[in-house]
Amino acid sequence: MSNKAGLEGVVVADVQTSLVNGVEGKLIYAGYSIEDLAENALFEEVFFLLHNVRLPNAEELEAIRSQIAKQASVPQEILDMMKSLPKETPGMAVIRTATSMLSAYDPDAENLTDKDVAREKAARLTGQLTTISAAWVRISKGQEPIAPREDLNLAENFVYMMSGEGPDKTASEAVNVYLVLLAEHGMNASTFASRVITATGSDMHSAVVGAIGALKGPSHGGANAEAMRMFMEIGEPENVKPWFKEHIKEGERRIMGIGHRVYKALDPRAAVMKLHAERLAESSGNTKWYKIAESLAEEALGDDYFIERKLFPNVDYYSAIVLSTLDLSIDMFTPLFAMSRIAGWTANIVDQMGGRLIRPTANYVGPMDLKWTPVEER
Ligand code: ACO
Image (cartoon, rainbow, N blue to C red; front, side, top):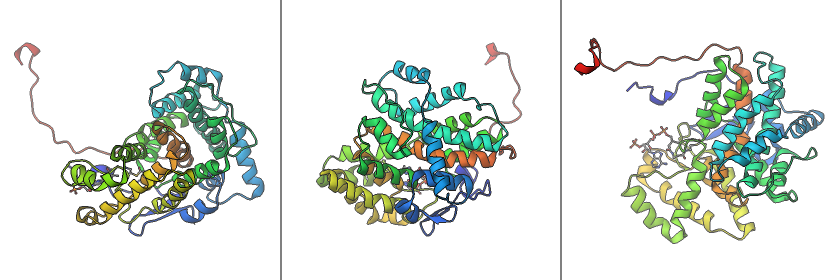
């Protein structure tokens, strides 16, 4: 296999959106540390930052908040299509299909060149993806979807559309922090997928659909759901040690939510997420999942195998605990990741528009000099 398997270390673009420092465990969005933004920023501020490489002033922030909220509703035809799907369809498959269908109703879907139009489309898609995700939370339970409100921010709108109440302040703040932390992350697999599609001259909806497909995998965004399933399989804090011994030390499994291609130190987003997970678990009165996660991480962090390979919890590990306190089904964890990462995807898509076709080469290791023979002679 080529020594660049997985394209590790290959630089594919100059970007201004984010810097991932895997050695020191630091993450910066357009100059601002992730800790600073997670503590203070609204998701809409981060959306503006990623698209404009500067923070908005008060007027600009209200403009982008309202632009996203006002365009967040989705055509009834899409909600009807979602209602026609089997209730057990994975959330990621639903948002992938619905996002693709959105393009048929978007007046600018086939405008492939104007970057101002693309930024407006990005804001629209960002709102709509949240509406679709919240709608599936309800439709999958046999409930009617709820339309977005124009006066709310995206995190509040999600909580409102999902529950039909409130929106609850603690839940909205938790969703906002989550959305800020996950919005952008260098040349991750889904962002790269969106750039590859955009570089062919294709449209934004196609690029976002491709990115959703890449995010769905358990080696990428799907890990938050897999981490939660693992915590539930462990069941009780006292089962952590025997589970670790049986499945990790003596078995073939990986701890989902641990390890990262770039971070060889603690993922800074995991540190922020851990604090929120602990706080939310305590305020919800259910600390069991947090305790299981914490003690499994301790097992891994103290184990030579994990130490030698520099394997630390990544953002998906503790976000599973945060999301579980929101009364979301595990299946909806990864769609929430997509609701956030669409900010980074679309900023990268706009940046990539008009760029050169991305077309690497393959190292051929197959047979040579064979001669075709008629099928009945083989
Ligand atoms: N548990 C146990 N061992 C692991 C883990 C893990 N979670 N992750 C990596 N390793 C081991 C591998 O077995 C390998 O060991 P070896 O050198 O003896 O063969 C070594 O660490 C390196 O692993 P690779 O798979 O080569 O690392 P890569 O950079 O390709 O993969 C990945 C990174 C996919 C994230 C991996 O760590 C993993 O599978 N983690 C679990 C899934 C996960 O949490 N994904 C989310 C990533 S973050 C995100 O997308 C938001």
